[in-house]
Each structure stands twice: as structure tokens, then as C-alpha cells.
Amino acid sequence: MIDQGRQTYTKAICDKVLSQKQELIVQKDNLRSSEYRNLESKLHSWREDIIDIYAKSFESGLDTAFGQLQEWGSEAVDTLVNFNLPLEVALDEVRDYRNLIGQIIKEEASKFEMSFDQFYNLISEFDAVVDRAVHWLTLSYSRRFYTRINAAEATALELSIPVIKITKQVGVLPLIGDIDTERAQELMDKALSKGNELSLEYMVIDLSGVPIIDTMVADRIFKVVDALSLIGIETTLSGIRPEIAQTMTNLGIDSSNIAVTSSLHTALEKFLEA
Image 1 (cartoon, rainbow, N blue to C red):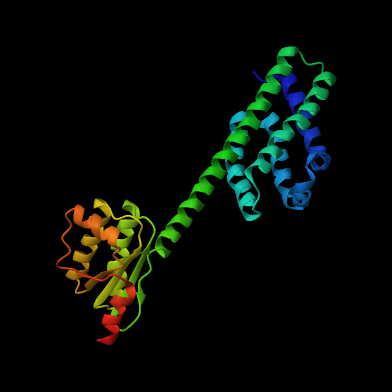
Image 2 (cartoon, rainbow, N blue to C red; image 1 turned 120 degrees about the vertical axis):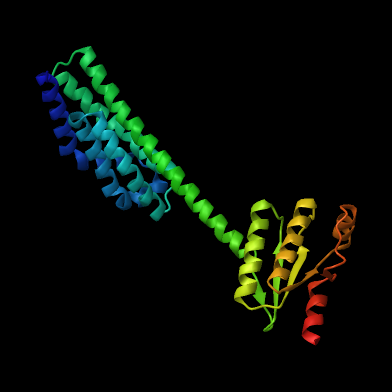
């Protein structure tokens, strides 16, 4: 059975919030700290959307409002990302309207002489809507943040393993920094794909920028050398510092079948003089 009394005051609250939308936006502007005052024009339509959802939630019910908030959360994050706004700005926007609209609920509760239970239920449902707005905003922002981080890491990983063609037949692959499992796989993929793409016959893998050569790193590097030999590319390892040479010897690594030079300069001299 439809509660006619509830329908009456929820519609009144919805209408009043919508009628005061611009006033609520102005009130929110006044709450904003001076460092974010220049964001007001960028946030205007965004604020209108969240006020609409909040207002209509009183009539539409929680399920409908939650569905709208899920869609809104993704769009809101696009605004944050496009304008380089921190998540805390958006969360403040969402939470501040709890108090501003809460005051309207309080006024309407007095006007309609709601019972304690009616007022409590209304406030509880509105709190649930606000909490869900915070939930979807945070979740969407986290997903977008990690997507961008992963994309940046992938780009950095690709750029960290460049294959440079210096003559028609010779290419150089300089390695800098630590080599973990993921980067070792990228090393294998990039060495083979670029070596084949550039039609190389020789490749110099320079290790002068690799601080540590342990068993895993050495194993991966020698597997790359073996793989390159299978596609007809002869490999030279350069930049083997004394401490790395000692470590490789202690690990029992046999490099007798691989061309090794102390520096990239030495390796390139051999090819350029040939």
C-alpha cells in the first residue's frame, strides 16, 4: 500500500531542493577555501548533477538513486582527471551537500510535522545515498588512477629498453637500472622484435647501467642471447664491471661462448672498424 503522507513530503523535499539548486551551489562556493575558488566554473555542472540525483532520490527510492550514482561516479571522475583535481575536492563536494540538503529536510520535517520515525527514516535513506556517492566516486577514481599508473608504467618499461640501430647491421640495447621479472620479459620481447624488425646481424647489450647481476638477471640475459642467436643475431655483452664479473664467476656463469667487452665504446669500436 502506498504511503500517501510519505509521497507528499518526499515530493515536497525533492521540489524544494531542485528549486534551490542554484542557491545551494552558491552556498557551496562560499564554503570552498580560497585555493579552490578558481574551480567554481569547472564544477558548476558537476554540482548540478549531484544535486539532481540527491533531490530525486527522495521520490525515486534507493535502488534507482544507487544506479544513477554509479553512472555519475564514472563521469565525475572524468571531470576530476580532465581538470587535474584531487579526489579530496570531489569528496568535499559530496559530503558538504549532506549538511546543506539536510537543513532542507529538517525544515520540511517541521513543516509536515513528521514523526520521529519518519524523520529518522528519511535522514537514514539520504545518508545512504550520500555514502553511496562517496563509494562510487572513490571506487571510480581508484580504478582510473591505477589504470593511468599501469599505462605510465608500461610506457616507461617500453622506453627503458630501447634498441638503437647504429649501422645497417649493428644495434645497441643499453640497460639501466634493476632488472626484475617483468622487465626481463620485456627485454626478451623487445630484443627479438626490434632485432628482427631492424634486420640486425649484431646486437650489443650494454650492462654498464645495471647495478646488480644476480642469478635471475644473468639467466635472463643469457636466455636473450640464446634466443637472438636462433634468429641469426650475434650478441656482444658490454659494460661488464669488475664487481659484476666477479659475481658472475662466483655464480658459476660460463660466458666463454659469448663476446664480452669492458665498455660499450670498446664494443662499438670493433664493429665500426670492421
